[in-house]
Image (tube, rainbow, N blue to C red; front, top):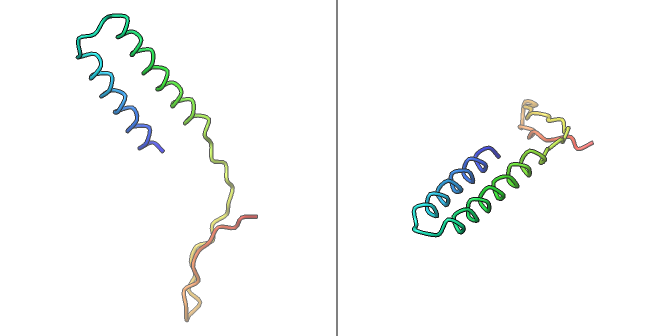
Length: 76
């Protein structure tokens, strides 16, 4: 999930550089900055609130002498 956040942050920086290097009016520039900030803020809030609280117990693979019993998650 951190990789996705880094990718989105890099994309937002690229888009902001693209918008600010073009010759546009100050009002349009401010509007683009506010828009980029709102997108970034909403993504940060989403990733902070997205908690995976699964308490599944993992049983690793076992070898019983003949075959390998694959590992699994207990879903109870």
